[in-house]
Length: 83
Picture 1 (cartoon, rainbow, N blue to C red):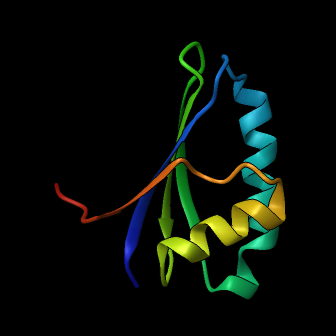
Picture 2: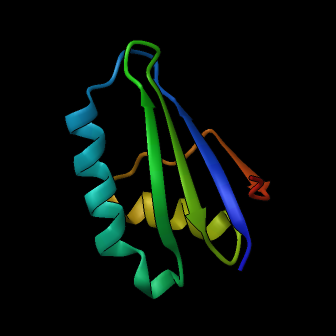
Picture 3: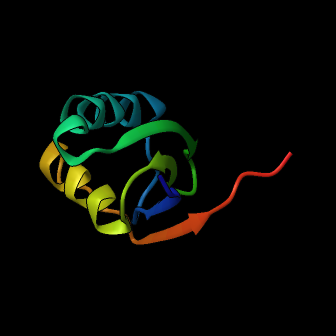
């Protein structure tokens, strides 16, 4: 399945604890969409969140975000993992 990196660009800073809660909601909502959220990173003071996701499409990634908590990504990129 393709691998995606999504980017959430919030208009204010974001707390790691809040992102952890949103990620937990994504994990609860992912199975019906055949999506697996793998990891996430947070730039708290910049209000940026990055999610690495195994999914059938970019649309499926945002479908899970929409269902789980309503914070859809501003950008979703198809990526390949390197070493």
